[in-house]
Image (cartoon, rainbow, N blue to C red; front, top):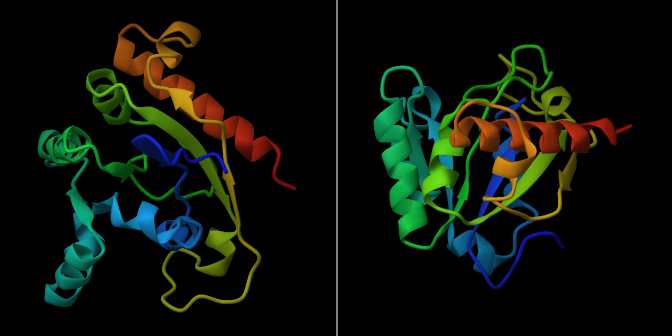
Amino acid sequence: EHLPEDRQWVITPNHVSYLDSFAIAALLDWNQLRKTYWAGWTGVAFANPVMRFLSRLGKILPVEPIRAARSSLAFGAVILKDKKNLVWFPEGELSGSGELQDFKPGIGMLLEHFPVCVVPVFVHGTREALPPGKFLPRPHAVRVIFGRPLDSREPKRESHGEKPHEKIANALHNSVAELGRHVS
């Protein structure tokens, strides 16, 4: 209900399991899925020919936050420039502890240059369904909580940080953290 049908958006979920993307995708309708691209770490999404093939089918953008952060952001920028939707995991990696980690500045940089609607999302239960290091999921309840859509220019006024992209990233982190506080 929080994803606008009439305009472009970016989803910024927490990241605790490789199931997170699937949990979010299961809640999108076909029209939304058709226009949505996903950030995916090259170490998994493009690790071998089979994964590369599946990643291309799933519209996964190669993200390498350590060695190629600029090119990762460039891929995201191309998607936003083309008026497509984007799911970007702003923590930059799976949370080792399961707790929400600081957001990398990249999401703020993208949204600073492409002022689109941004929807904070909190995913809960996927870590228990597919813990780190496991390959087969097990039954466990999963909740995906979509926050209210925000104008990406809005967080610049509400948050801390020296630069606009830091303010955006920090405000989105606070929004995702707030959603997580409502999970029982």
